[in-house]
Image 1 (tube, helix red, strand yellow):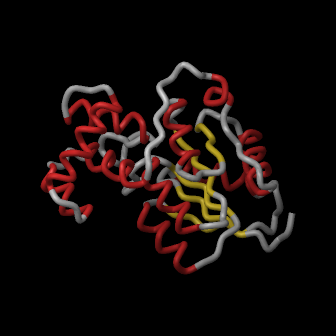
Image 2 (cartoon, rainbow, N blue to C red):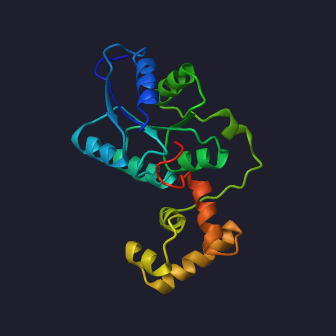
Image 3 (spheres, rainbow, N blue to C red):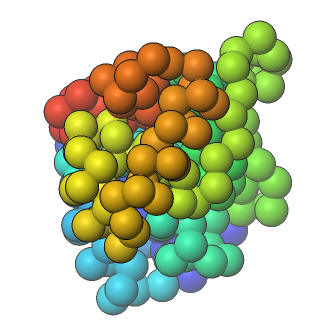
Amino acid sequence: MSTALKFLLADDHGLFRDSVAVWLKQLDQGLHIDFAGTQQEVESALKANHYNLLILDLGMPGMKGAYSVRGFCQQLRSTPLIVVSADENPIVIRSCIEAGASGYVTKSSDGESILLAVKQVLAGAEYIPLCARTNKNDAHFDFNEKQTKMLCLLAEGLSNKEIAEKMFLTEGTVKQYVSRLLRILDVDNRMQAGLKARELLGITQSGTGNS
């Protein structure tokens, strides 16, 4: 591989991050790797540099699951993104792929799997764990960008008024959206919807938990 390759490796666990970097160096000893430990650090790095690949921890501080993945993919445009996470839920994996990620690697994977994912993604292919490709019995949802953002805000426990302010909508419009989301999710109330949204998007309870 070309020594001009430059990766951004974003994970808040230093030991895991350093271990992945060692494996990535097997691609090419001249590979340049920048590090980030929060969503804000990733945003700053992307504004200041061009990367050939972003490897992103789903549970870093500031991350909002698949919603954040969608935002980074829109910012990156043609640059591929691989999610790394301890979350092996097939629904979360598919949500991240649908949000634009080119690959998803679970933290239980070995170094060879990480290298394989990187090679496939750099070659223009997707890397999806076997569990997400073979498990067809999980509920599947296809949300647009506005619905995904609203799910994220529901997961945070925001009221209709607070959601309306953040999304520049009227409370009446938000109420209609929320009612529709409750039906889609097959839940009875906002609390259940928030919990379901966390599951679907891979959002940790504290925002800094399992990653």
